[in-house]
Length: 369
Image (cartoon, rainbow, N blue to C red; front, top):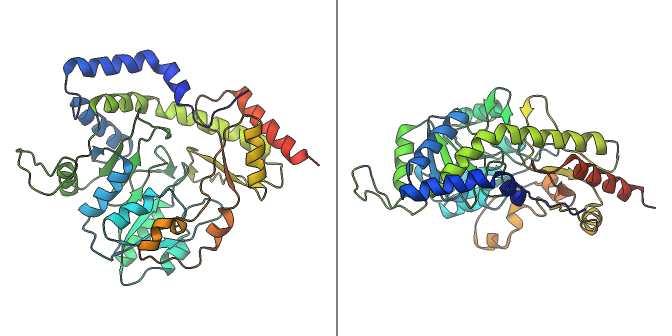
């Protein structure tokens, strides 16, 4: 048995006929970039996330960068963010001229620790980048209260967590705007790159629309200095089709997570991800911890089980930070768990047989003398 970490090939096999029909329809009408499918998808996903407006762009990295530019970030403005995330969570700040301030994380949720967040606010702090990670949701109510207390603008990096909720609040509805990724590895994915900015602010929305295509306004004038960051009509149509299936796929992710919980929770050497009552975790990634991480990873690969590490270093440990100013005090939790985290396969095309095989092989690992 060979179990892939990602399920994109299986997704295509299941949906090939529908995908080809979608692509053919776009190619026949000829408007292959920014056609009507893009506008339709923007409205559809905005509604799904309880937002008014959506602006689809070439990647979530661009979405984050454009959000900071449009929000008026100035050189050396401090931005609070987790020190434990994918690199795009911080490069958008650096590109926009801001100064990252890295916050330690909760050891159970892997997301920003609110006490450390508040302790690191200074008179230079202007923004919070709220990163929902691995399919979980931040405490939206608490973050909004902190933002209001200190007059900070919140931008939500929801790249990994569409479909998740904190109580009745949906991921994608926090702060001035929210950014979502459609990278092929995500639960809601395109067949290439893509991203979107969601907001309730009409003026913010209009500026983003100009930024994504060379600063062009509604009457065809190139009004501001912009970029070229658009998605194809075919990708938007596929994303719309995938959005219709999203809740079903999330349900399957949660079923697989439950199988892992039932099968592995009795292994004392494993620390399982936290499944909180107040959140709807969608398990974009199933990340657990073990002090034998490297040995377990080797064992899983030897047994043809795809696995990955998210993440093996703090953001500030990347070489690029030799050239940038940042603050990062007391990241004690990150420095511990980066040595322990390991991600198991989880996607809607895993079979129960495969999940049980993964569980059995992990049990065998911990039963070895």
